[in-house]
Every structure is written in structure tokens, then in C-alpha cells.
Image (cartoon, rainbow, N blue to C red; front, side):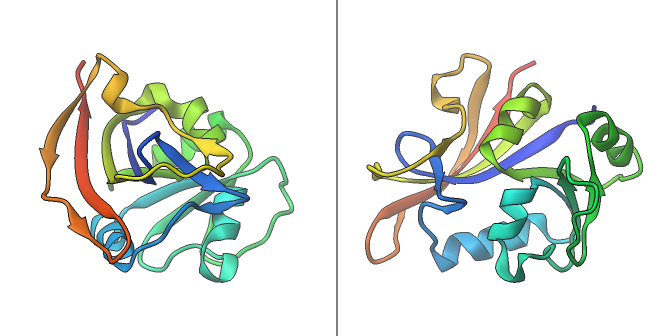
Length: 166
């Protein structure tokens, strides 16, 4: 399997979602996501796709959706039904590959992730149902870039990049 990049908005406890949607959205993070992923490959599960605007793949990117439902239909996506099929599809692409969700897919593919673009807020949500591994607590991940925190009007938020140490 090719190397994958994680790209997520997390709260202080590395929670990412609730009821099929992000915990929180800020325009600066959405713009950051677009800037990093535009022209690249996005890998996601069906529920993540359905949380996107219009429930279709994002324009300007190759959108690969993993679902067991082989009859699933959406615009601007490549459908794969298994991790093996995903691996074969990814071999066709030379662009960077971003794993954008959901949590179940992150758990299945985490060993193939080597870089992470994390938008972290200094706040913990009480209600959540999806989390990803806390890279700050893993010995084989290190911070390689950390920008100054910004306030979006409600919360302190910062962009942090991590690299897996081989």
C-alpha cells in the first residue's frame, strides 16, 4: 500500500466527529483543507462522502470511496469495495493520497499513514462518536511544523503537521 496522509480537524482529545459530521467547522480550516488537497487523491468511507456538500466527491480532486455497497452511486467518485481494491486503485495514481475519514477507515489504514495535517482546537467536545489516534501520545510520530494559534471567534485553533518516524 502506498503512503497515506491524514488530514483532520480534531478537538483537544482527538475526537473528529458526531453523527456523521465534523465536530466543528471554521472557514480558515476548510480553506486550508482545500489548499492542501486540491489536485490530489482523497480516500474516504461512504459516511464521510455523505457528509460532504451535495454528498458527492469534491471537485478538483480524485475521490475514492470505500463501501461494501457495490451499487452505491454518487458524482465524481471512484468506488472500491475492499482494502485490496483500494490498494490496486491507488497504484494508478501518482498524486499525494489523503485519508479524510471516517474513523473506522483510519483504524484500518493507520499503519500506512506517514504524514498528518492536523487542525487542532484547544477545546474538548462532550458529545462525539468518532476519534482518531492521538499522535501526540505515539512515540513514532513527531511534530514537524506548528503554526501560531488563531482565534476563529470562538476557539483557539492551530495547524500542526506530524511525520511518522520510520
